[in-house]
Length: 389
Ligand code: ADP
Ligand code: MG
Image (cartoon, rainbow, N blue to C red):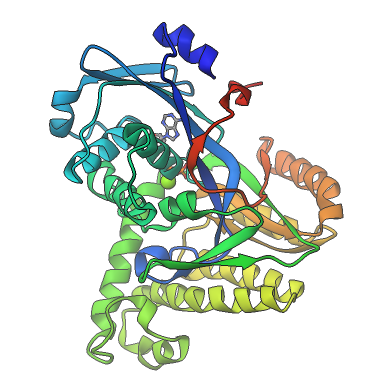
């Protein structure tokens, strides 16, 4: 990576490399912005940024994926407006850092990402967190502040009202464990997964145009549900505060559409706890069933699935050695996550790829989901090959 950096910028003096992983969420979908629970895993797939101090008062950023270079004077960064361009992510982060008292130093950055974009594996958070580390260049910031700052960049600058899951897991991910995050207290605990299972993400290779606007609609619908339930549960601040039983006692008072959205969030928040408990008991079949329940809830109540995701889930469930499958990420395309026996992986890969190709005419990319470490500096970065290698 240093060699490519040198070719691009003429010198690699003082270069450091920072890594931030993508993630796959095992269960707890669309619960983070309702301050509920989620259970993601940080992936081996990550975004790497090589960064070195530069003369000339400018920040330059090159994205290998986009083959595009942009530059700004450091003095003008705080006044840049949203451009609806990939640079919104690093610039949003830079502005948040400035707001938190960290000056942005002149530097050259090279972005190399292994996280597929727009696939529900959170390339956006991987880009935000790696950008933040690159701009900080070793200056310390408590990890939880880093997560909140990157989330604010996405909400306030990019304009996506996301929860904190993606940034949090990219920072707090750990090898061999999933992480159960309480999105209100911002505490987490590592959840060791039972032996005898593995997870694969299968990419539909589509992202429907609806994704962004529907996400905003769902956030608004959840807020409407909170307003509708409050008169009956005055202590309620977010959907995370009602149990499924409490919710059903008031559901009939909400408009039907809003009640279905809320029902997903309320049952899904409860499902995270049930999944963790099944995992702790080594009840693999129950874990699988809960994943399928989660998918049906997203499909019918939350209505964020699509034909491609439903096909992958339904087809996966018919393949030998599969315990469960569900869509993962925001929806309307992107990936499913499938839980299966390790020795069933080769057969699964072949069958799911063939079926999907036959049905949609595209080959789905398939990614192993080995729980990996969270973000940090990479010391041994000569080994990060360029994309396509
Ligand atoms: P997801 O987070 O699921 O991958 P998002 O729509 O939230 O999908 O974020 C994808 C966006 O993040 C891309 O459209 C692009 O703007 C930005 N992005 C991610 N990775 C890169 C990269 N390597 N280079 C440039 N932009 C990137
Ligand atoms: Mg994203």
